[in-house]
Image (cartoon, rainbow, N blue to C red; front, side, top):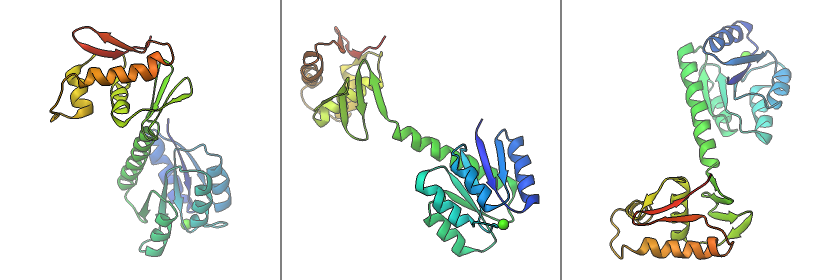
Length: 226
Ligand code: CA
C-alpha cells in the first residue's frame, strides 16, 4: 500500500482529503502544523507528500527545502489561489507538482497518480543494472564487472552483452542480435555477431575461466542463469 503524508493546517480540508485518499486505497497520515509535518516527512516513511504552503510553525517552502536536503520523495505543493510566487519557488525548490486551492478532488487524485507513476519510471531507469551469473552490467554508467572485477568493453561489445543479458535464458538468433545491436539497416558481414561474441568470450569466459555465453548451434547465442 502506498502511503501519503498530508501537511495541512486547515482541518476540514485535511480531513476531507484524508478520507478521499483512504477511499482510493492509500495509507494516510496527516500533520496540521509545520513542525510536526517536517518531523514526519523526515522519517522517510512516505511515498508522496501533500504540502500546504501557509502553515503555522514552519512554512511549506521551508519544509520542502529541508526535505530536499536528503530525500527525493515526491512532493505536491498546495498553494492558495493565484499565489504565483509560491508556485515558482516551490517548483524551484524541487516540488514535483502543485495544485491550487480550491481544487476538485479528482484533479488531486489524478496529479497524485501521475506523480507516483513518474517516480516509479525514474526508479526503473536508475536501477537499470543487469545481473547474470556473476556478471553485472550498469547501462547508465557503461560499466561491466565479473564478480566485482571490472571488464573493459568497446561500445559494440557492451551493446551485444547488454542485449544478451536483457534476454537472459532466451536464445537470441544472429538476426535478433544484428538488429538489436547493429540496427536493422546494417549492411556488412553477417558474421559480425560471431566475431563480437568471440571478443566477449576472450574478455569474459576465457579470462575468468567460466562459461557464460552458450552457442546454440545453427541458431544463435544465449546467456543462461539457473
Ligand atoms: Ca494553510
